[in-house]
Image 1 (cartoon, rainbow, N blue to C red):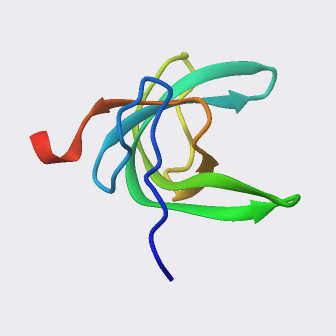
Image 2: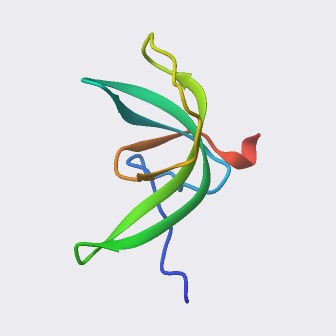
Image 3: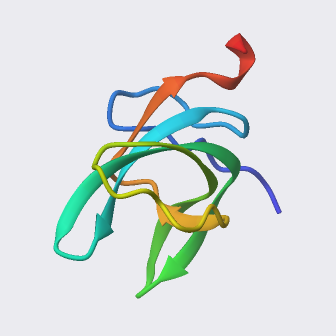
Length: 90
């Protein structure tokens, strides 16, 4: 399988494995911002369209006053994601 391109955030920065990102998550009726480390950027065909996806591991740093219960690996869409710390700068 050939590589067709890269996944970028809305600012144009490429999203690579090891990058620290910020994305919106839901908790009950509220939305909060969550920080996570990208494990693997990938894509999938959903509804006939190619959708960029990210497998991420939350770090525990997030907005809101209710603590996160689970730090499991999640798969999220890369639509509203911002890279805060590129992985090669660590």
